[in-house]
Amino acid sequence: MAIEVRPATGRRGRRLFVDIPFRLFRADPNWVPPLRFSVHDRISPKNPANEHQVTRLWIAYRDGVAVGRIGACVDSFFNQYQGVSWGWVGFFEAPDDPAVVEALFDVAWRWLKLQGATTAVGPASFTTNDDTGLLVEGFEDPPTFLSTWNPPYYEHLWVDNGWQPAMDLWGWKLVQGGVNLDAKQARTLERLKERASVTIRNMRMKDFDEEVSRLFEVYNAAWSKNWGFAPMPEAEIKHLAKSMKQLIDPGITMVVEKPDGEPVGVAIVLPDVNQVMRKLPSGRLLPFGWFHLLRGVKKVTRVRYFALGIKPQHQSLALGPLIYHYGLELWTTRPQYVEVEASWILATNDKMNKAIERLGGVRSKVWRLYQRPL
Image 1: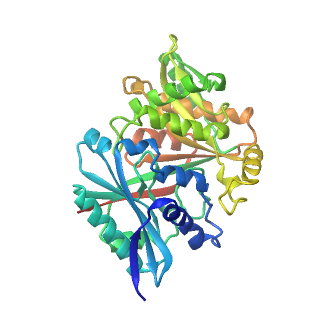
Image 2 (image 1 turned 90 degrees about the vertical axis):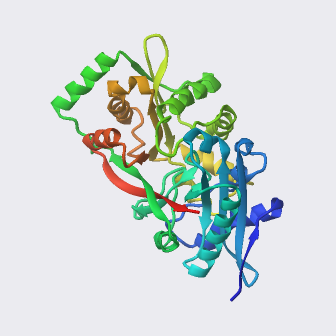
């Protein structure tokens, strides 16, 4: 059967590109449909990331029927920041068919090489500020909001095509009633709080724009030296915040401040909207999707620590454990949240991983990023 890979261009091409996973996984009980408008927004020519990214999308056809997709990206801002020549491969969706997968990877690699990239990295749609990583452990645990899911066979598709592991990202699970500090740990946390001379407060929605600026000021500074990271420009921060404003529970997002009001740490915590998305199999918000989504958010029982960061000059104060402990204390005021997932955390981040484990966290998922020389 003939396989052909064609560019996905124009509105019609992008609509078909977004539809591919719905065709492949609609019947899979583990798959959570994405919001179509969010995917359209990310691949839109109007997305602010296009100021520094060049991207291409392709669809694989077998005998004229769409069966898979892939995207590629070269981010000049990221490459300059990190001093590399990477090209990203993402939006990968395909059946367990080596011929289809080989054709998809080949077209992405060839295009990236023409753009001057020397190393392909993925899966990421399109950088580590977006959907990132191939799930390789933890398939029995449902995917949380803005985390990636894929069927188990994806791993061998990537490995069989020459991709090598580059970095693992971990997810940790904490459950209500499963976090018990002994007296020594409690005293240690209290001493840390006194020594740090900080206060931890929740997000102020009345000051939303300024709060978002504070959150990402810390986030960009905290992650500045991390593997695979580049700061989010202001236009992209505002764009992301606007799209997520109605889904935020301000009572669980935290800002750590010094006495003078300087933000030194943040924890961006999001309700697990995927619990609602399972009830929207079409991925569409119209005509009634918005109603079900916003009503359903109030019934969510799980949250995801989406990002936690501490400014580099304050990381010696061990604020990470304080933030997590404060967040877990919110179970007294938000008892509906019976489970927490903290992800993604670099496997090499020993301090954070050990701190979560001491609080009672259990590693529940592993996502893997791969690389391949071009």
